[in-house]
Length: 294
Ligand SMILES: [Zn+2]
Ligand SMILES: [Zn+2]
Image (cartoon, rainbow, N blue to C red; front, side, top):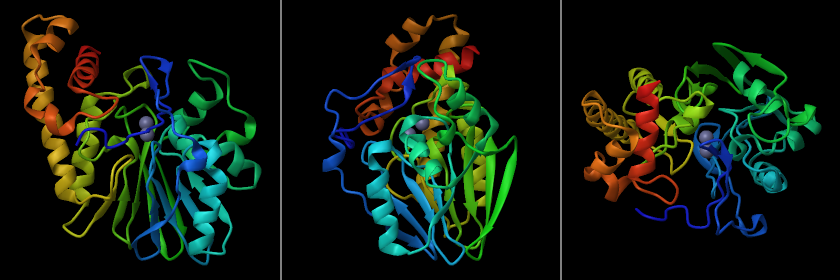
């Protein structure tokens, strides 16, 4: 399970510092194609960037997330393979660059961008770096939820408080029975929890619980990173989160510092299967420590 994202580009802000992989992949070498999920829902799996959800139909294209800016033309071409309709709507699941990097390109071309209030705020006035241009900012924002009645489905976009960040949205296509979870769900990978960006492990666990309550055995779940998943995959992730959270909370209870907790290796049982290029057991442990200390 190591190096699932070889050549990964990651545009997240970790400990407040945006970083990209040493082995940054040339966007020209990245293949972008839309895979059918169910009904009129498709997915473009990210290569070092977030997974894009697509609703395609007679009302137009609705995208969930848009990866990095250099990929916008390839994303358009992949969408054109499945539909000749314009890309009318775009929701950002959160503010990270591997999910919002294409906003300016799509916004300029007339796509209506939507997101939680805090996403617009963090793009307009980032803690690090320059404010994003006007065309890159969500035009419609919401503080709780929004519904899109499009392509024969009722898509509900629901804010999940303080999970991966402070502006996460999951999108539930009720008729297709497909849920896009953004980076609240890293399939079979330790999640990156952006504590500096308002994220918290408890919010990730709560969001996973809420999705599981609304899912049934046939629900298809699109994670922020990793292949398309089932509720059992999400359950396994939730269980890993809950177990490691409990172990780390017990060490904090003993009065241990962050370094002492990290040195104790509370995630040892999971590291082999859940470590990946950027988030290993130690980094994940530190994010839980910081979450629980908040
Ligand atoms: Zn991501
Ligand atoms: Zn993210």
